Image 1 (cartoon, one colour):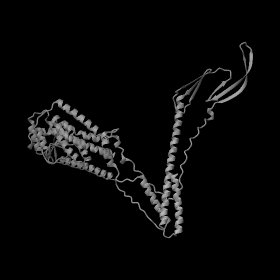
Image 2 (spheres, rainbow, N blue to C red):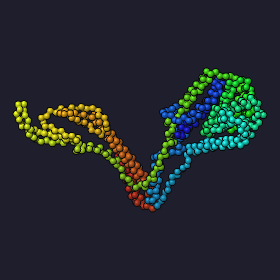
Image 3 (cartoon, rainbow, N blue to C red):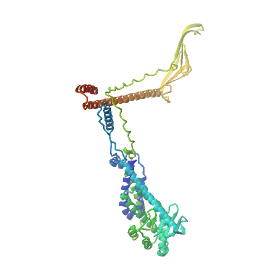
Image 4 (cartoon, rainbow, N blue to C red):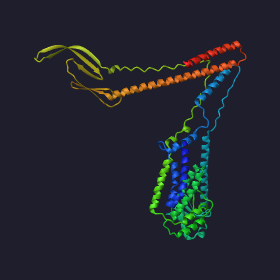
Length: 530
């Protein structure tokens, strides 16, 4: 998620720079409305989620994202384990001798750099938005407190007011729309200028420019630290006014441009609330008047070409700056590894742990007795007549077979027709693999080949699972044995160093103790080589 936010910030900044570079030539060739529409590009990129698959922009910024999300300090698992073992051995040696050698491990903890930067960014964005919301609310309340409603226009949807708090014509309000004029509006402006000024402010309401202003403020809040965003916001507001001028003057006589310019000059002032739409401020006065001096209407074909070009530019810009799904889950989002457990006190010597043998595969279970066929043999005397009509007595072996809930009797002299075939029966591996039916003296036996294959596959999967489990157990046992050897070796070396530092033991006592420790060390080294 952090990587996606960084990529989005960089991508929107690049797109703002692109619009800043293209807005003037686009306005001259295709009109101010097309130039104003280009500002949708960074907004759409800000709202675009990560897309599945790999995207070139994500790969291009991969190194930057990694550097931004990499922790400032890192310690490998082996280092943590070694530190814990050394600390345990020092504690063991201290308890066994009178000379105490203490070792301390200093852990520096604190908030990460990313957390600090993220907190500052979030505080700046929230503070920026709150300041604008509060100042805009106070500004509108001040306008309404000193206002006098003159009339309603646009089928009663827009209220026209006069107020002492307004320095010039302006539009405000999203849910309840207002156009405000100063008290001396009728004295300072002639009727033509008043109509053009009203048309300008109504154009802002008609185009939804006040909603666009709040969206732009949200984007600027997210980029409050970015000087490119501040420059882009001022250019966006200038393009908005130029587009509204074009809307007002479209279809009107060219002679009205002079009167419209006079209204703009009379309305020019220094301060402006960003969410409201003022007729004009001093900052963009020169550009507005320069545009009014040129009367160059654009043909329908050129406007259509400009719309198609702006749409193609938008799609290309979004595609080139899109974030891939790999930017969502990154190293910084991965869970923090648990702290190393406290190492237990090491014994004087630890015998090497032998890896457990791989468990043998279980024997194939015997089939339950009920599923096997039971045969009952007996000899009976059978009386029958031959071709001549004579009675003939013969001894016949009778075999009675029971299985699968069925019973079949064969007298030894019967001709039985058996039809056996193999086919796919469907179902699951737990169903019967042999299906037997009887049609008079004819037996039909179907062998379900697919069920036999399913049973074989299931048995093979169980065998592979048991083999993998055995391998994991063996690896774990070998690792445990290696850890035990290292632990024991470290304990013996620490004990040897402690005995050598003793001054209260005689030379014979030291030699005897050291000999026993050296023997144990050699045994461990021999075991490691084996």
